[in-house]
Length: 389
Image (cartoon, rainbow, N blue to C red; front, side):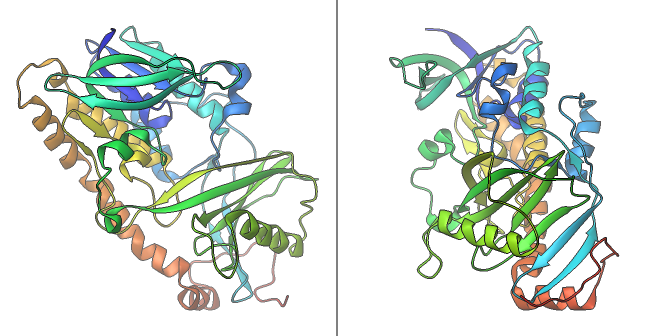
């Protein structure tokens, strides 16, 4: 049985930043079901994501000294968001500064950076099925996935510490916190997204509010001569508006009213999405198991932005582990947890504060009042402030 110091489940921004930041004497294994390093599979396996880097994500990249290559960056970069409220029948433009990128190539670039380190091993096409924690190690069960997506016979690998950086559907969090109280769990949403061609690139990002679609928000994001349309929809079926797929059709109806031709989608994808509560949804793990990124509940409750939280939590966990991963002292893991929890305080505070922003954005009456006053808004290419359906 192979032995590593740290096994990281998930090769997204969190797992890659963590792997690259760990002490070079630590033997690291990164596993992912996807084939992130294979350039011919990037488009096929890219995560369902808007691919917009906000100021916090840009700041973290700058702090880590990471520049994005030409394949990762996309046009256009947008400097405003067109917010359209179908309940108050108003719209406004607000200033924003996003960096537009291809999520598949972004993950590829970060993992490639980590894989260059001699102490980092990457296994692709691996599905982790569970783990067993012992006194001095963690036994991780996994199956390799063949070219047709079929699971191969079960195998096992050992490590000193296990990290769940495997996103909203984290297998690691599910097993570790199987008895977690429901009121402390983040709320479950389904993100559905389609890709459509457009005649010319949009000069803005678009946020759409319609209670028929979701109590959260929907988006339209320009990607060259294409757009991504998507929505974060409650996972539970609505008695009034139906399933997530049915509610997504309301979004397409809204956008058709606003002049978009959505008759021929090029691709449709989806994934699970978490929406943390103000307090209690973030859990950093326990024992020899750690959680980071969205698996730990670290994601914005107002915008569902998770890349900056993923990168920052990966960096903070790497620093918390330091050289302690190699220590045989019984209290080493407790000290790592203490350091990690302390380092996560700014991220938890950010989530807490963003719940107030979330209240303003997603309470229809409050949002309508903000739209009506025009506070913080700017002039945009679409001049209408109020319209009728």
